[in-house]
Amino acid sequence: MKAKVNIRIVFLAKSFILLLLFTQCGSKSKETSESHSYNIVFLHHSTGFNIWKGKTGNIGRIDRMRGKEYDVPAWFTDFNKTHGTNYRITQQVFPKAKPYGWNNYPYDYYNIWVKHGNADSYKEEPTLKTLTAKYDLIIFKHCFPVSGIEADLGKADIDSPEKRIENYKLQYEALKAKIHEYPETKFLLWTGAALVKGETTPEKAARSREFFTWVVNEWDEENDNLFLWDFYELETEGGVYLKDEYAVNNNDSHPNPEFAAKAAPLFCQRIVEVIETK
Image 1 (cartoon, rainbow, N blue to C red):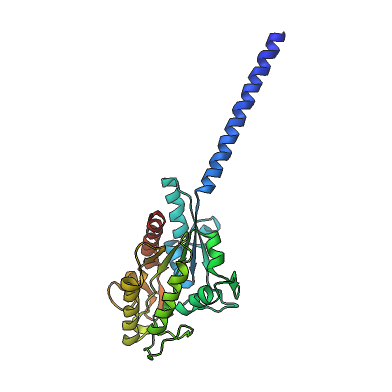
Image 2 (image 1 turned 180 degrees about the vertical axis):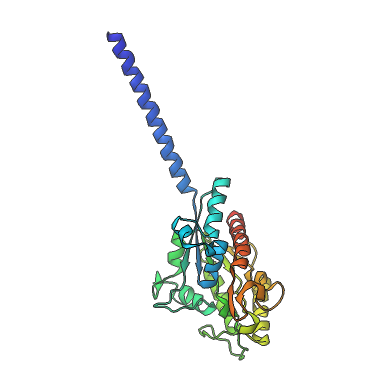
């Protein structure tokens, strides 16, 4: 009888040890998964949100209630499953309509991130001091009014919200210097969204091409923590206007769902390239 009791005690002890080891292994896997996560934030307004939604932005309300993901997060869900990665992407309107105002042009990033960059936030918008503490990759962009560029006056002013190349260049240089202060965080900037022909002039369109060519060929540097996605080129295909077939209509410069469906996976692939660039 005593021998049987001992055998039972040994069996139970072994079972407990195996259960404990299994539990520890499970905890370790979860911890490892969390520690290997890569946190990404996409700061945008309406044009960016159209790309974020892609073709899924057209699905019906019932499908949305069933939890179907928009194209960009769905792409990363599939990518993570296939590659064993934990790239976690979220999106955020930046800046909000209130209290800052619905403006995300070179002046506004300079104003929030550089001019007021020593604070944690400015008018309820997070500065890089706050964002870099939470995210490994920060993606930011401008909406299409950025391309409505007026002629230079010959008196560049970094503190001017006027859309002129001379002001944009000073603000971009200041932004790059600020971004270089956070070398452990990567940044991905979209070149600006373009305007359809019906919403601009040939002169403004030519200036937008001039400025974003400067961004790609001169402002961008190799071997730093700042990367580009050439959205302007994707929309214009070598021209100076958002192509009509990519727009909501001839007088609306928002990208249509067909273009968004094409652009969303390209955007995701660019993000992965940036993450995996050493």
